[in-house]
Image (tube, rainbow, N blue to C red; front, side, top):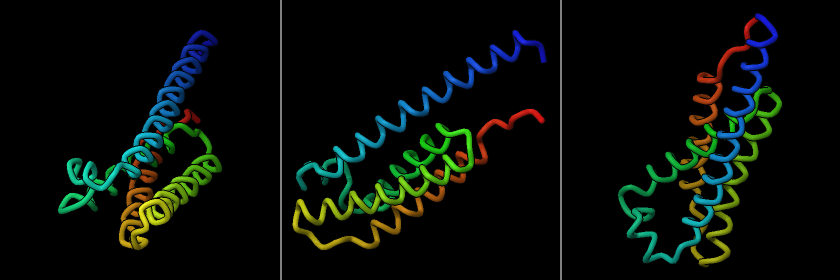
Amino acid sequence: MSSREQSTAVRRSIRERTVFVTLACISVLGVAAISFLPMGDKRLLHTNGKYHSWGHFLAFSFVAFVAGRASRTLRGRIFLFLGSLLFGLGIEVGEHLVFGSLLEWMDVLVDAAGVVGGTLLAILSAPRDPA
């Protein structure tokens, strides 16, 4: 590979990582904001009711996917995986403390399943470094 091709590949990689870091930040803020909406607003967004678990699963899959794609190293992906798990637990504990509701362990498990799925998709879809 020529130095020009290498330079182009490096710029493309940096640009791609920047996009994924930005999406990760936006998705974390979005999940946090939606999680602490008043209960009436949550019902309108289907965060209560029959789509509740799907919402949790998809939201945390997306958070973990974009976080996993933002990192190039296994160590970074493990760190972000654990951070995403803690984020899911923190959201549920925060809702419990703010709203005084019971801690919803099923939501914690669904969040964790979403994190596992999103992380696996990030790992499987990450571009391979040429050997």
